[in-house]
Length: 326
Image: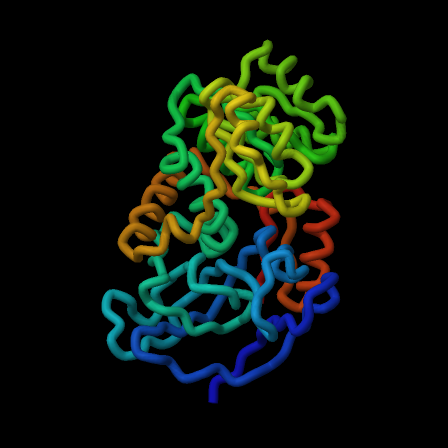
C-alpha cells in the first residue's frame, strides 16, 4: 500500500479549514502515471475554491499545478517512463500532495532547461499569460496594455512577455510597496489602485492614450472602471476575481464606452486538448528559454505550512509566485 500526505478541504472558510491528512493512494488506473511531487504551485483560484466563491464538492483537495518525477506508470501509457521529469496544470484539483496519480495526457515532459521549481510556479500562470497574449488577443508591437495586479504571479509574467513582444505596459498594484516589482517586470508606469482616481492616473501616465487591451484579474473592484481605460473598439479581459466576482455588465454600456469588447476566458478550455496543451507549453518553454518569461518566487513554504501560504497570499504579503514543497 502506497501512502501519501495530502491537503484536504472539508468546509469552506478561512485558511485554517485546510488540514493535512495521511491516506492510501489508489492503485494506478490504465492511462495514469504516479508522480512523486517535488514542487507545487499556488494560484489565487485556490483561495476562491477554499472560500467557496467557486464551490467544489466536499471533501476535496486543492491546487492545480505541480512538478515532479514519474514514480510508476500504469498500463496503456506511452511516451512517459519512470524517472521522467514532468509537470501538469490541468488535471483537476488535488496538487497539494507529495504523491499523486495523474492521467498521462495531462502531463508535459520538462526540458532540461526548466527546473521543477520553475515549472511548478510558471506552468499555470505562464499558460494563462500564453493564451491571453496569443489567443484572447494576439498582442502586437506598439500596443498599449493595462495590466491589473502587475506585481502578482500572472501579472509579472504577462508584463514581461508582452514587453518582449514590443507592447507598452502600464500596470496597477494594490499597494505602493509593489510598484518596484511591477516596474522590474517591464511596466513603463505603475498606478496605485488605492487611489480612487486610478483611471485618471492611468490616463495621465499614458499621456491620454487608452489601452488596446485591459487585463483585469481583480474583478469586482475594478471591472466597471476598467471599461473607461479601453480605447474605442478595445478589449477588456476579465480573467480573475481577486476582489470578488465581477459585476454584470449591460451590453449597452459597452456601446457607450466605445463599442468595446468584453470577455471572461480561462486557461482550462484553452488547454483541454492534450496536443494543444503540449504545443502551448512548448511556446511557454520557448519564451522561458529566450528570457521573455522568468520566475519570480516571492515566497517558499513547506506543504505543512499550507495555512500560512493562504494567509500570506490573501494578505498580499508576497510579490510574485509562491512555491510549496512537499
